[in-house]
Image 1: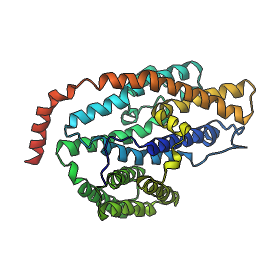
Image 2 (image 1 turned 30 degrees about the horizontal axis):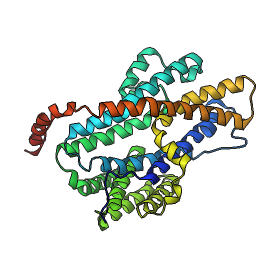
Image 3 (image 1 turned 45 degrees about the vertical axis):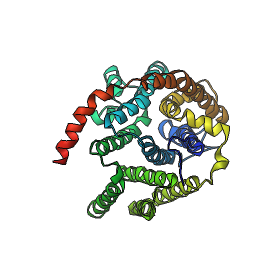
Image 4 (image 1 turned 90 degrees about the vertical axis):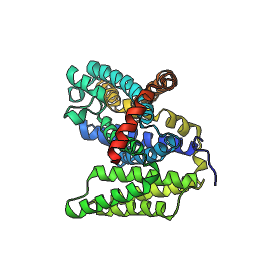
Length: 340
């Protein structure tokens, strides 16, 4: 089976859209009540497990990253493309969230100017600083994953991904036995699952790809909550359907649209949405539909504007630049040093 690695997979966009919307609904229902103790929404509608949409995002990231580096051998080109894809949109969303929350949000959600400035790194928790928006914690996980991919490219070991997968599984198994399972290891397993599914989709897989997927699934049984196993099983099932062409029914316009704006929507929806919900409640509105729909529509509108009028033009412009080329020679020297 020959597949164009640059082919856009509509089903993947739809899955992004689904992941984004269930995370949004989780924040606007269960998490909102948890933080502010208002039950106007959860009394009628609740999505307590919607946070597992993040796990679906991580598996999608593993799939997409290996698709994106199919013809990339320059590690600095990879970093630059990741920077272009993530940082400008993040900065726009962060600035907008900071302004709105500072002006209209509750004290619980606010950060000061120095904390705001550190948030420009995208990994404020690394400096033990509060995030402008609570969803930023996942970006630290993504950044670590990208660092691993960078090192793999730097050492020219892209084709040894299965070996690295086995090493990761072995390390995890040992740590589970000696210590205890960690959430971050679980997230890494999801990236590995996504990578293996990309190889299956591309048609360059063998039995070892399936083996690694099921070992990662089995390792979730080490976690105290059976939810991890159930969620990972569902993700694996969904991806098997996708790679074998059984999710074409998901090619629905609204899901494809949500998938396209999912990054911006994810970045700006949480604290901005809480602020809107609180303002509506303080204005005397208790209708759960209004408390859900208004922040949802406003978040989708803002995310759409960011995606189509800021994100895409910036990516198009910066993608034409190639400053990473000047790093190629130094990168080769570094790789040679590690090989010695």
